[in-house]
Length: 75
Image 1 (cartoon, rainbow, N blue to C red):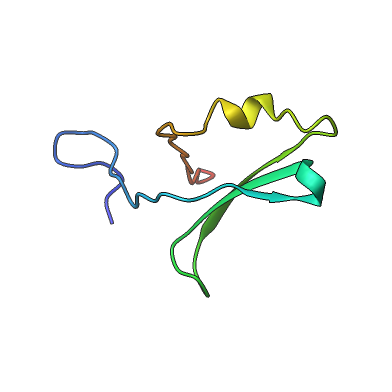
Image 2: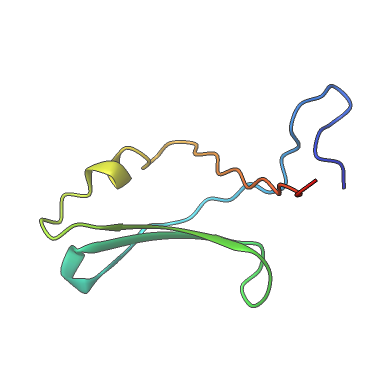
């Protein structure tokens, strides 16, 4: 699977929408994106805030967010 398309732009592997789960009385907010529900690669964004404000997570809500994973080979 090539890393870039014919124009040299990075390829989009997957696009997901997800809800933010709230745990621990509101101190944790979790957004998880997975290729499948049982096996595969997943990304988890988690915010912990004792004050329950989650300013960083709030900046991501209702926005498009790009997560990039680069594999760097030792040469």
